[in-house]
Length: 179
View 1 (cartoon, one colour):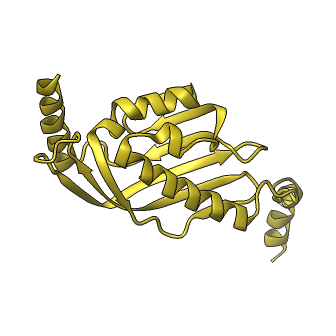
View 2 (cartoon, helix red, strand yellow):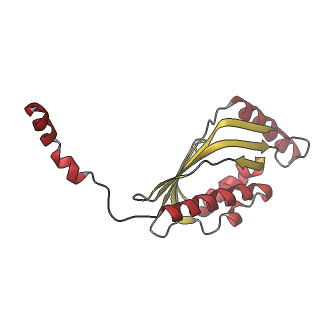
View 3 (cartoon, rainbow, N blue to C red):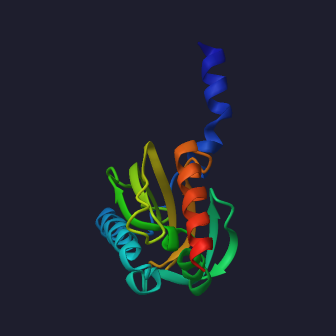
């Protein structure tokens, strides 16, 4: 018993140094609103490949990206949306993402969004529909700055999911032929 008290006492400093901040970065309501807006605007950008328009005002001047497909580093919002326009936005015409309840880290202003995903990789060709369903889905972790703009975007998905790779290869070949 005494040994247990001594052991507990040796961790006493942790009780005062690991307590979360009482200053809230974002509220749950704000985090939920940003998560839903981000998801809706992100999804709507695929129909016309216009994420720069649909996501306008959501990003900080610089966004630290860490995506499963290798798009990483500090990027401007324009660089992020140029990347989309020339890759995923050009190849995917429709996204159905069943985001589960987002997890909001009110202290660190982080939003975790995850859920099953269905995408149509068609490159804009009506005769090239490739519906890809990865039930494990996709996860985004967004970090917000003091202005509640996305300043870090981690994107996780299975970037080597065989049906997706097959559809991407088929679609890229068709897009190359059409040039």
